[in-house]
Image 1 (cartoon, one colour):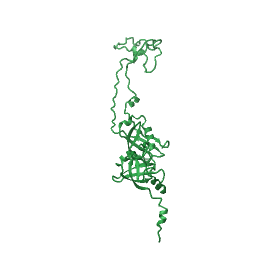
Image 2 (cartoon, rainbow, N blue to C red):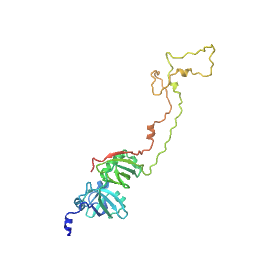
Image 3 (cartoon, rainbow, N blue to C red):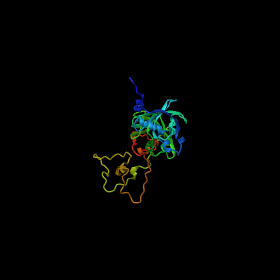
Image 4 (cartoon, helix red, strand yellow):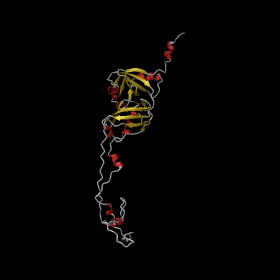
Length: 303
């Protein structure tokens, strides 16, 4: 039986994945103007020959790749931004090279992959300065629009207000590597590295120096049971040394209700100290608040 090798060359095996090796360089080595859009994201730049080969292999879009440093068996995942690199070379963000322990010109293996869409991720800031950001969830949402994938164990870098913050990817669902293109993802933050909970100090309530009943005005008009009582046997009531009549005649003191019969021009000061409410105690707590189940949508304004 004859075998036609030329026939196999004319019609290549489309199920074969893209798998090749390149020399790796940081974005700062890319000829031309500085490319901050690459340095501040999670995508790489590949040569034009890679696009030609990927097109012939009918790779599923979006194009996602597994990048592996074979010398230490460490890998991560990334998308592709452009196909303008020199032949045999790829350019990637510096934080990605740092994760893979790569130096300029090291050989890496690039393999096309298909990974699930992200539903959940958890990050840990590497410095407490991250707490100074007013709305960290919104900042992270905006920065992740330049990323295509997240890999558990990676240490990504985002830039905000001319400051670079490093975040460790602690967990991703539904798998250790997920794509964040066109997805709704729930996000949580773990306490930053070096963060310590502040000690709570309970405020002691000082005793009131003035009896609130003394602030109430004297009753006017008819007052029930104001007179003295008389025993039926004719005997006089024993005097036990206490006089509760003035206190009984005064109105019940209720805080917060104004005294409409207050004399004009008379000022009274209540110098009592009240316990702080729950809201104040929360404000005195730590600046960090862990986002439980809060997410954001990455379906708009993606570059």
